[in-house]
Length: 77
Image 1 (cartoon, one colour):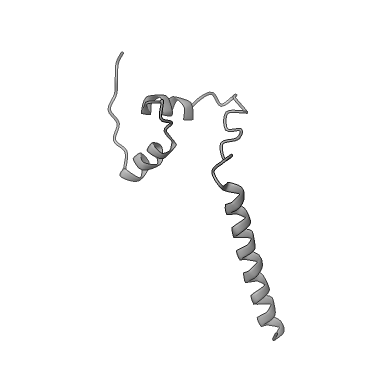
Image 2: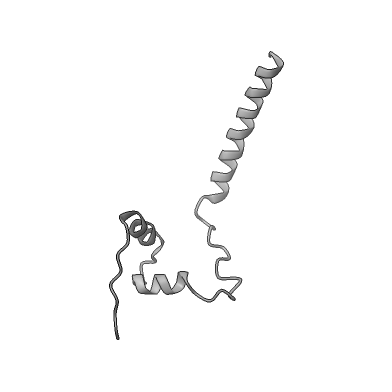
């Protein structure tokens, strides 16, 4: 099997490393990430279990609080 060596910045390596599953090589990871564009379900559930919903809810609450503070300031309350 032929191999190629590529150079990536440290940030790119760390991101790939974080995405790599325990049972896969970097080659396997790259093949998984660059799979067929026709596979519409390839990313389905990718954010499940990652705390995405909690992160979104936290950001929404922060924005709501900021909006309320700005509204109160504008109304002189």
